[in-house]
Length: 138
Image 1 (cartoon, rainbow, N blue to C red):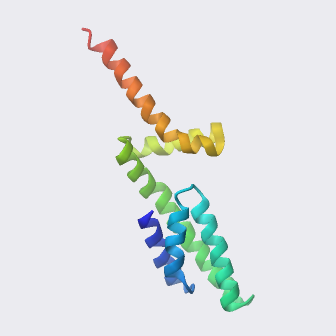
Image 2 (image 1 turned 135 degrees about the horizontal axis):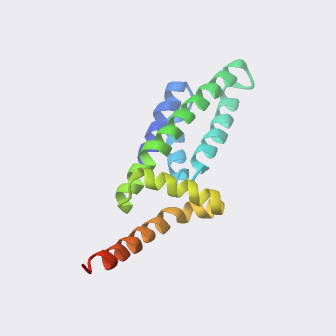
């Protein structure tokens, strides 16, 4: 969450959006719920750019830069930060975390994404115990 907030703050500041330093922590806190961080950043950035620059060409270019920053930060968060942090905490490989999230989302939607990593941890423990029960008898 803190890394996401820092990346958003720096990226929006480099994009020239006013109040970028304040928007980063809001986006980081909202990022605890999947996709809410990105959505809140887009909505708040649009509101800030429209009120600061009006509906002008500067506003449009600022929003293009915000979209680029958000795409880069979401990619870093989705492919590097989240799998590494969640995998390290849960004891799962980052690829297993990403696969669990994709399968959970495909089968059960939003609830599946929330329950995917805990279910994968439970499955890992159960399968490990079964493996040891079956093959340690020799």
